[in-house]
Image (cartoon, rainbow, N blue to C red):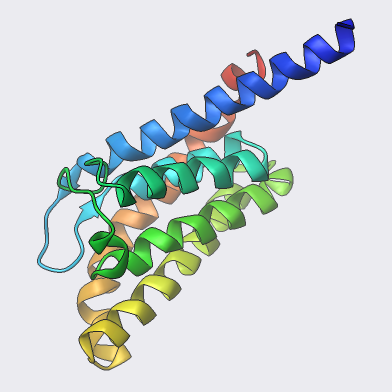
Length: 182
């Protein structure tokens, strides 16, 4: 086996491990939550942002997809130690699927995230992507008007998600230096 082939396999393995670690981080962050009637407040989106900044796009997407798949098969990784496919089609389903869009936005724009402000703006776009799928899904599921759903499924989350954007913008370059060393 050539040195280049061995190095490539080693790099691929390290990317797979980092992707799995990000899926685990999302699962843990999902448990740090404040329960609310329809959609809980948790730290999962912060972990999704971090995955988007730290991993190449395909590995970032794989980490979120892995999180969603292990939750869909019943492992208790969703907020409140819940799992099962019903959560992907229930009130939180659109937001869970929105994590895929969010990590896609962050990882696609990460090459331009060279300043704190740019990282915050990228996270804000990712929040918008998550809110769009989640809010539209919840409105359809409940039969409520979009404006009504926004009152209980968007507005209460804005301050916390703004803090998650700030935290991710701060943490990304610090954690990135660690992951680049791997």
